[in-house]
Amino acid sequence: MKIELEQAIDMLPAVSGIYEKLDLKTYAIKNFKKGKQEELGMDMLFKHVFKNAKKIKPELFEIIAIVLNVSEEEAKKESITVLFKIYNDIVADPEVVNFFKQAV
Image (cartoon, rainbow, N blue to C red; front, side, top):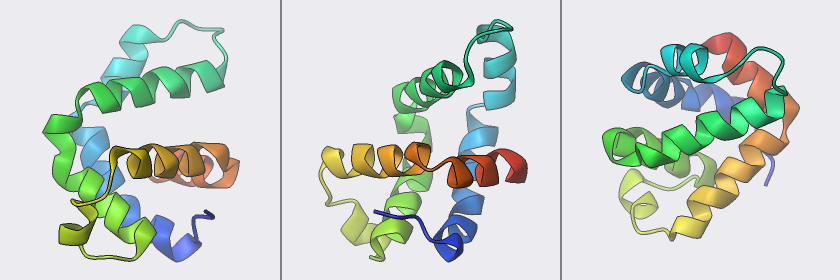
């Protein structure tokens, strides 16, 4: 599934909310050693996000709803595999990853 530009823009508030609620900048600074591959760093960052999913449920449902073009209520009924598929679609697209990095 390709993430469209309009979807990425619509996701910005949710992505920013996740970034702020989980203080991802501080987490990254404390946990990533210089010289590690960026891909490994992104993987660790997303694991941190998933570990703290309970704290950011509204933002996750908002992202799922945007990507699937459904209501947030419908997004809540989706299986966990949908969340992982969306995650994989986002991180597999370097343009989307760079867009979010620069935006938050």
